[in-house]
Image 1 (cartoon, rainbow, N blue to C red):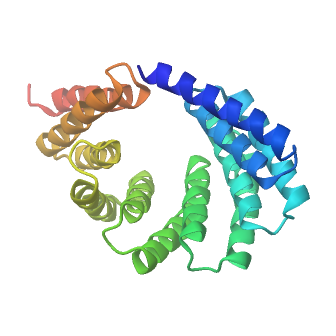
Image 2 (image 1 turned 180 degrees about the vertical axis):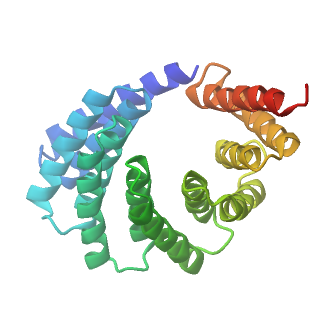
Length: 261
């Protein structure tokens, strides 16, 4: 069902792009936006090479038409950074996100939600490279901006708290990780509901931290909730569902090792 919807969305964006090119021209900002939208759909479907090509064309067009210092150009760089990230090209992802952040800080200011999103993504790229000090600096800035501008209980604030919690856990700071993830779960549950994938993502990270702290019963509860949400939202075979199942399997294995024989 989801694949059918994705294919339909791809066809719709391809048609919109064809019309935009014919009516407005290849170098019109609307044409570039259509290319970016097509790239997003291709990325969701895992067609990374095609998505990257669409993003690169869109960015080149935006730079020609709007210039290298326009917020839309920054979003073109942001998309490109994202597709590099999912392909594991971390150096290229970092470079694109740093360029996007510099433009957004210059054009929109340090306290803009778009700047916070750029900081968040840059932090995630640093985390993937195990550059923990830089990741923490970026993510803490993102959390602070979002709390100030969007509010302490905004869903985007929760996303940055979740990423920060994951980072703190990776560094062994389980107490602060637990606190950050508790907040993320509470916000997601309140703002998005108990069946939302973002709630599941926060529960998954919280479950991993609880397991590290030896709180296996609480960890199992959080992970089982996350599996249920993902399975209902995406299906049992989805990568997110499988990732939480792997965390549950690790929990059961280590719990067995902890049990007295």
